Length: 333
Image 1 (tube, rainbow, N blue to C red):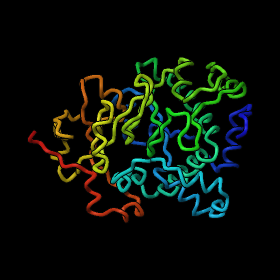
Image 2: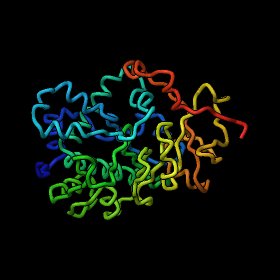
Image 3: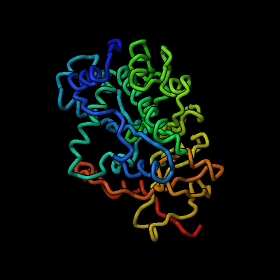
Image 4: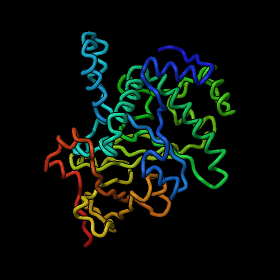
């Protein structure tokens, strides 16, 4: 890995474009995703989201395009272990990575591939760029959104399930290494002072520099150890992972309901999970999951309506048994 040594944002972006074909930002703007945009419009949370390729899609694409890499043990060993959604079940056939306007699908997938390649091959730089963008996001929040009573949010796993709280995820480093050059660049861009230090994760980097960003994600990992004040998690239900439901550490449970069973576009008030009757909250109202704990106490279900996948390759892999991912809405509980 090379030491961060860029005096301007242009120098950094030129390097990312030439070396990793990365032409845009890592984070997507809040108007790219309809539900994320609802955070701003309805929940008053100015939000950015990170989209990578899910599961082993990035790895498989890299191997397909560059089979010569597999001749080297270091690449063969590294790539064979990487899976951005380690506990993916039926959800991989209905992943939102394959949703959206088909006209933009190829461009969108290429951008996610390029971001994923940066994380796989230079995770140290990836985390530094991610940190820069998060501070720029916070800077804009302070200027435009905080004065009118908004919160600042970031979702790191839009279409992935990476353990960003860990210093390492497979071979990738999730530490944020802030040297003098990086600290100076951030100050030049935002006038925000960041202490020179190696932070064990991005949450620590925000917290120790008084950056008030609330990060949240959905996850299928059932035994994550996180600081809930810094990182809010919602467990994502899948029929293939039912055995893990007793180990989710009091997290709310996101459930996708079949569109064919939803009446008048309204979710049921309750649903049975693991022989427990739980309150259902409409998770499509907005995407900012930390607010789920504001009005309702205890474990609850975050109800999501079935979304249509438009990617033809993903649709071709679906079959009837995979539809078990979507649960039937029951209005008689």
